[in-house]
Amino acid sequence: MRGLGTIALVLAGIWVLTQALVLVLVPLELLVLDDVGSRRLVTVPVMLLPALFAAGLGLVLILFRRPLARRLFEGHAPMARLDGRLLLRVGILVLALSALLGGIDVLLSALVRWGLFPAEVPAGQALRSVTPQLVEGASSIVLGALLLVFSDRLSRGLWRGRRSPPAPVPSEVAHCPACGATYDPADYEGGFFAPTCETCGAPLDIAGT
View (cartoon, rainbow, N blue to C red):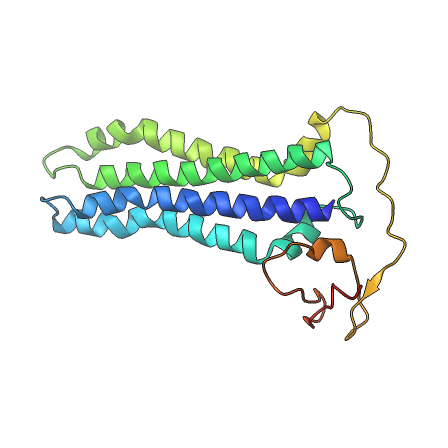
């Protein structure tokens, strides 16, 4: 199950990185306007925060996919077949990340819009004009956080299919030549990086196992 979870984390990381590219377009468009003032220049770094957060999150999901898979997904068997509940949980996690990124973007955009109101506009009137956006952004962030925290419990409750039998345990268990820790060679197949031991970091000879 962890093999599939690792792949899902990489795909989720790539998707989050694409969202970072989308989020960075608005601040860039703001910079190329002819009437860019000092107040507007101050808002550009603030509006870049969602894009930077998304880029950092995407890199964390990709670079730390194996430790995250060990923490998020249970089971030691190699990926012999698709698991329905796991796919459901991955979908919930992707929706949670989408809600978090969208909520942060909407919330910061509302705050920036509030700060750009002319000085002659009363503060209360300016705040009321952006209140719907503030509520939408905060609600999206809360929803994303709840989905992220309770993804396992929610997937278990929603998945009502017949419990699938456990995947067969591999007949041979590989060991790290440096520290002796066990690992599943199937988890390292098709990776972009050189396989290393998750315990001590020593290189692993996957081809020889």
